[in-house]
Image (cartoon, rainbow, N blue to C red; front, side, top):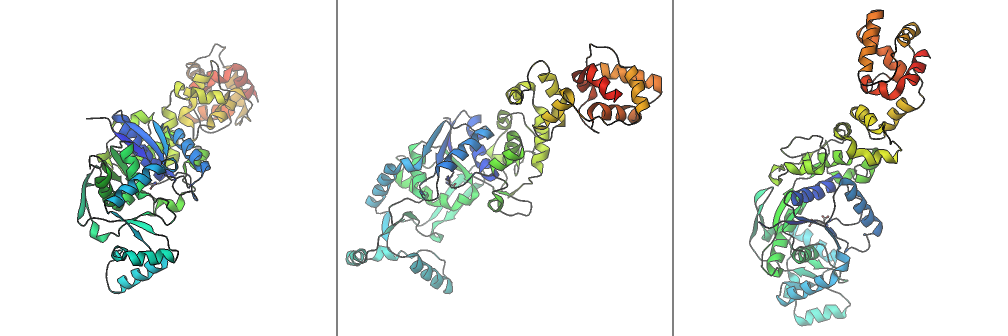
Length: 447
Ligand code: GLU
């Protein structure tokens, strides 16, 4: 089997959200497991709504998620290919000019509905005589161009949904070219998929109807007449079943990043929600790729809960070894021989990565010790062993303190933790204590 070529094709008309990340990652992982190629295609034929700023932002968001394109293309730079395809379709009598205004079409739709007919374009333009067309053009009307669909049911084997079929009689001939000569999404997408040798189209199930149309375009335009393999994944919906687009702002990849969620937590949630694999924290995208199969994607809506991002971020951080975060720690100036033991001590206690700064302060900086029961703390201080300290120091010290004072359990440990760290809960003190060091520990116990 040849290695797959997939593509993720956002329109740069906004920032991408976690639902788009799902599509991008499903493509990326599919290619990764089979050593295929991933193409990032910007669908920027809508020049008014597309912007450079969003192109850049999408690239940044994908890079943050760990999605590295093998190739990036922009539809705005490929117009000649679309012109050639449109010319070919005209030659085949599959692309015909239409002159109706949106108002006229709307009126016709209402009439059809009133008569109980499906609101499908009636192909009136196909019946226009040469003279009638010339007359309309003389009035200053410019044509838009529709693709003439063949009758019949479009069928395909979908890698997520199994056997699929759409009756093309229920569809209007789609407009491929606007009055101003610009292209709508449908044709350029197929032309690019052919030109770039895309083997698998993995996209949301909101595109199922497009697929029926595009299958006919592939048949007309691909040298082999063959279409790629399709996979339509379920869409992420909020807890109430609402479409994600409603909340795109708060769930944009950029805002999730700013909230401090881990990229791998976002990726794991985006991929594993609505699949037969349970949502879990992972160490790398490779780990996510390892048991990835499109067949695991469910056909039901993927209900997802943003609250899971907090839990997953916490769990993801706990999995990271020092090498994974070394560079990130360096940007906070956490370097040197204490950096690794600090990370290993605190990684299980982080809500977000930035919490590492809180623990760095506990270890190296000044804190406000909370001193409950000064007499006991002074007794414990007197028993504090000399340095060098290691991970056994805490155990040895508290065992002695227990023997001397008779305190045990919470009454022994709680006041010591409060005095040494200033907070109720945190990392294992056996790991923190040697990092705090004797001088600071003694000062905090003494008050
Ligand atoms: N630009 C289209 C979209 O964002 C691409 C759809 C496709 O993958 O073909 O919906």
